[in-house]
Image (tube, rainbow, N blue to C red):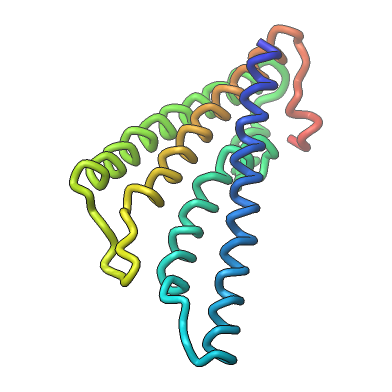
Length: 172
């Protein structure tokens, strides 16, 4: 199980690195547009459209990594009610709900992507970008989030087996 946890955490790390790279690329695209408009009196024609796609990719691709680093907003009072093994079981139940939610997110985003892909839907902008391309990253991010929930549940199950409350180190 530890190898699975390691692998899933690395997948989330790759998603986080992709999100960081995309953030830098989006910033550079906007700076390029500012430069081209200011000094060349022209436009890149994509600076209005692509940063939006990049924001969607950044948000979705970073979800799993954020979960792995305990960065999502948590209602700590809901976790602080139970201590020890009961607290770990409670955490497993909460993470299982997150797993179900992320599974639904995968299905819905896949249907969204697949409809755009099969219908060959393109943007209304000058670039006429196939919308399946940016939507693919939403699906991929949802899959990474799903996998990270599995990793977190596995970590909690190991902690339950070892009778070690890992939540203590997280300040809960």
